Each structure stands twice: as C-alpha cells, then as structure tokens.
Length: 224
Image (cartoon, rainbow, N blue to C red):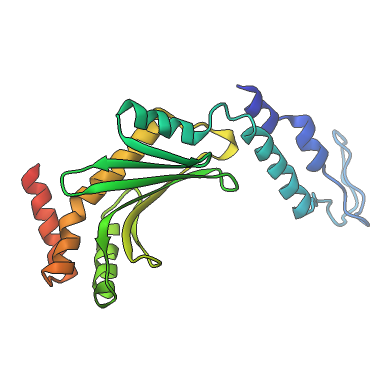
C-alpha cells in the first residue's frame, strides 16, 4: 500500500473525527463482559456532525491528490507526440489535438478540472446544426447515445457544434495512464467516424433520425 492510500485509511486520523460519543441523557449501558441485565433505557449512538466528516474526507482527498506524480495533461501530450499528432498546449490544464479520420479532421480538446479531479475530452468536427435542423439532430443524438457504452454526443449551443464528450475521474490522486488516454482518443474517434454519415443524412439529405441511424448501422456492419 503506498503512502497516499495509507494516509486515507490511517486509523488514528479517522478516530479523531469519527469518535463514538454517548448521547446526553442516555441510560446506563451493560458493561462489556458483564453478566446479567442492565436497566432498560435509551441507547447511545454515534453522532458525528456531517460538516466534520465532510471536511475530514475532503482534506484526505486533497492530501492524496497533491501527491499525483504526473499531470494528466502531460500524459496526453506525450501520447500526441508519440503518434505525431498536431497539438497545442494553450495552458497547463488544456491541450488540443488534431487527428485525421476517414470522414473528417477531429479536434480533441482535453481539459483537466482540478476541483473534480477529472480529465475531460470534447471531440468536435466540422459539422454545425442550424436552428431549423436542431430538433432532428437532437433526436438523432438521443438515438446514438442509447447505443454508446462510453461517452456521449452533445450540441454546443454557443456555436451549434456537434461533439463527443467524455471524462476520466481520477479522484484520490489517481494517475492517468498512457493506455487510458489512448483508449479515450480511440473511443472518441471511433464514435465520430461511425455516426458521421448519420449526421450528414439528417442535415443534407432530409432523412429522419431513425432512417439515418439505421443507415449508419448498416454501413458499420458492411465495413466489418
């Protein structure tokens, strides 16, 4: 067990907060190991203020999180460099990667969110949903999301962009691995490639969302 995890389960620190206190006015209790019965009365209970427990656990999480050996975005940057993808590190917690696919170029924006200890990724491509088509695109997105096990599609309303989103939770100071970051890139690109034509059919061929997703499923089976 590493030092970070050991601190989380340190019994001395836990007992400082989660000590059992008898309730004021509680009746006599049977002594441990005694024989016979005690007079009936109210039972003692453990009353630990919620605020104390919350502060306690948050302090433990923050302590362990400070021990993270490598910034999660550093792992993503290394992945981009190894694969020779074009990338831009705009800030310590932000990185954008450009990956070429069969149907489009995909812009993957990675953002580290310290308060949530989560690495968020948004994968967008050159596809905008105009106002008149927004309802149909939203229905298509709902149908697609029902088939996804990892991540989901969404519409960024500020720019009417369709994007794939996902997040890796690294609570407690967990480290991001090369395999995790590679898997999230693969999942994002795969989802966008699979349903790219479905979005095109709704936007430009005036097909219904159900017709479009059925076509995308047929194309995927055919490619396999």
